[in-house]
Image (tube, rainbow, N blue to C red; front, side):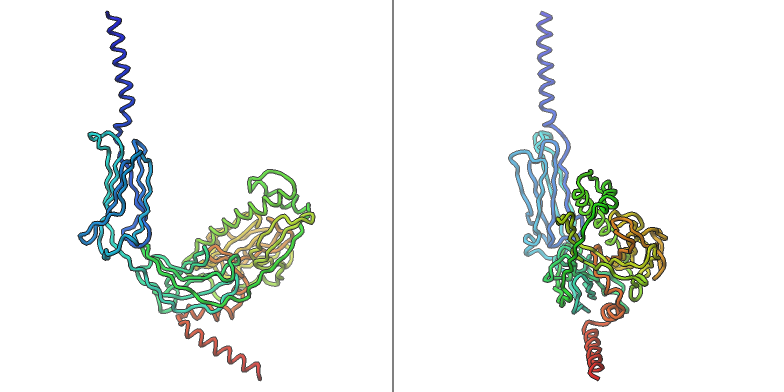
Length: 463
């Protein structure tokens, strides 16, 4: 009898524990999580994303409404027949805001899970967020433009966005060149933007002035200019075994590659390490001082000769086989061995160190997104953060990295993009294209001045 009772009790206990094990997860008490992005107090025509998650019993329903001016608009209302752990809802407010006036609004999002907690009703999360509706895009006024831009070179514009603008600049392809406020004489509300027509974009790529406000509303304006000097330079470099063994192979560890054939070693470094180095240069040269640190024309390394040009399309040949291609993003300048390297203009040291294929490198920040790069150095005489003056010695030339001989690799970058260096050596180009805009002259006044100068030059030539 006692044994029978024990068996029954054991079955009851096991059943109770099994039932508890089965039912307990269904009574979980963790409510769903709700995230709304962007995290702004302004609501405009830019898409808004609602992310709802529940890692327990799963989601049962999600509802989102927007109340404004006494009216309520349903943005989303979804019921799920099966448990859902995560749901993303992108709300195109531009189509939902029809008839809604600008002003205060309240967003309400509720989510319920499939838990049996709360008398089988589940856990519910409700968030309520106050917004100001703004569906009017910012305004843009172009003050001074650029009629001519060199391929791979720089254009300069001055513009005035409305006061509600949060970000602005020039977009071309996937590149965005930001504008900077407070640089124009007597016009603190005007912005200046230096932009490139990058070497790796087609000649017919279109540049646009763009502005976006806090609510995500955007306005664009096309920029019209004539693209000059559109040409591609090509060069072929034969790669000897000694160069691969002595210069390329020691860099394999930097790219995490294994030993292989000479061809495999060269490709691993020339592609993989080059990409790493260029990504790092881009990151450094996108972190600019928002004011001008330079003055006047930039200086070419004294007594130097240009040995290789900007944006050369290089073909690398090994044993009469083409094995790789790359752009040469700067000028190679040569004088004599261990020649003192001068800062091209005043600025601040943004980077010092070994940079893979570029070897020992110094990068200078000149403000407003403009940087210069000095590579293959044998020694460096500055450190990060140092202010530098034009023609101050920052190191000596060398053949570190993948340099085949002693020289300086000199590059100019604008907001992460390699640009044509030669125009920055030209005081006339700066006088014609930059200084009048910094002085607050309008585009029309600059054009009249340039036309007058052209007529004067033509008359002198006829005499």
